[in-house]
Length: 260
Image 1: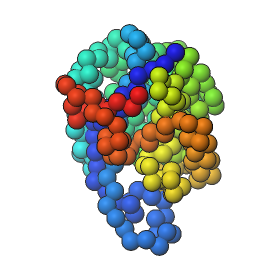
Image 2: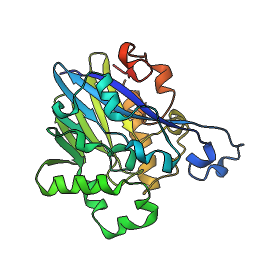
Image 3: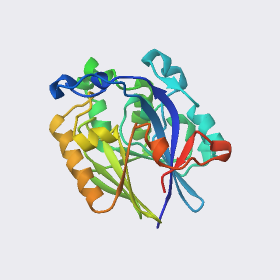
């Protein structure tokens, strides 16, 4: 089985390296601007559609200093996708910009990292250093779905479907997962927030939002090993994704980019 992979760019933020990288001053370099884009992904295998993450709610963007370029619901419409008919929704972790529109996917099988569900249900998760990075409404929606038996909890290494595998790496969030996707052109790894930016992986410079520095560095090692085996690594927030991969064009021009 092989998938078509499309990255959907729906938001952006202007920032600086000192704001994004953990203890940036340790590198002894002058500060520099560094923007970040926000993506979710569409995987197609014939008529079957899998969506990876759901983006943030548009109303949540401005209070957090982000810009919503296209509401995720409208982005899906431009791609000709009815979210109510999507068969599978994969969540890589429970941060606010990855679970903001879960309610759109009424009929989808929900696949969520077990470690994420467990952590965000604990009292320690309410510490502001953790809780500031989630959408409480989205977390509650997923926890309710779990209680209703609608969620498949993905483990440390989980085959979601032939050609689609999730691996828990942690670091950025307790159950952060990457997705290994088989395509006609080879293996694509959707790193999600295990790696936000190409520079983060190349220089192994940890991102400022993390729960475990050692796990984050371990994720870099795993991703570099996968790259050495021929996989293409797609970081979760780098504007260069839109420059390195072809624009889908048509109704999705400027919105969607063909990864494979």
